[in-house]
Image (cartoon, rainbow, N blue to C red; front, side, top):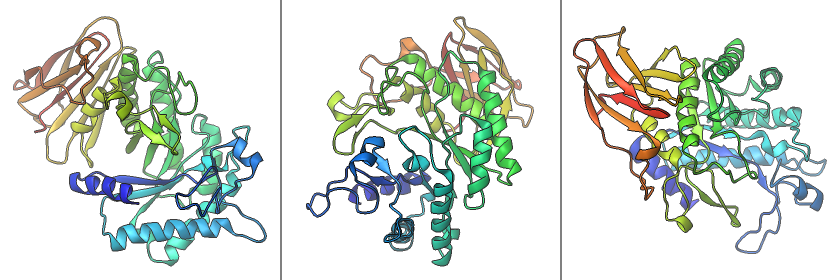
Length: 385
């Protein structure tokens, strides 16, 4: 818990909203004090442990693991919110992966029963209105299955969500936009104004569940910028990059899907960091989103931040530069915009975890800002200070 407190302290200090995720029961759990060898709450038999690294709570005639799991979540949230007084906890999620069998199929009925018990326990204890219950999905890649799944859980979640590992930088902007529009349409049909990307990174090129061959490809970063633009333009309200940084996972190996490397590689940034870092720095919680129609090569979006400043983000996946004129038809807009860009040639050779400085100050006093998007590059124009 001390490690969690340190992370939440940082989030509290910098105004970062937190989705606190419960993944289930660690099948291979071995407590430091030697009291537990295997999961007391989940399943630790040999057959189960061969199926998945995480299991659902064990529910039998003798032991109601779902009730114990709800108790675990209630006690944790109650302590963090009411005792530790953290205000950065925006929501919590319970990941459906723990109900997955060895064929990759999730028992959605069992998952729905589990989250129903959690919802009811928090309501009983007066905690339900203090934090949002964030949804998840196993079949977010397929809109029909997503609709079927969410029909069973929509009454418990405040915001629906899915993980997404569908595409890479070779896929079309239109493919991403159409998918997001369909998914968000289902969420709204269920009376939810919010939908979020529960986890994402470049969706292809997996070596195994925790390693990707493209982790240091420049194209992975460019794709991330296009993905975020497509999701936000269609109505996504939050996005969680999986994972924040490479980490020592389950006390056994390095999980290498983060924005920067683990200490064994000197904490160096992966290319995705420079793209996602600019996106995070020049947007803010509560920004208004203004979609801009994309082309095959160029995707764009505008954000009006709560302080009144503006950020325009543009990704060009073509092999040639593109000239763009940015016109703000909503307001007079800023007169000057700092310009930031990422290209493969500009990625620091030492992979320093440091975002690029502005390369230009673009004039927009005439109501239009002209900018050249570099080939296979990402540009941000912003007057945020």
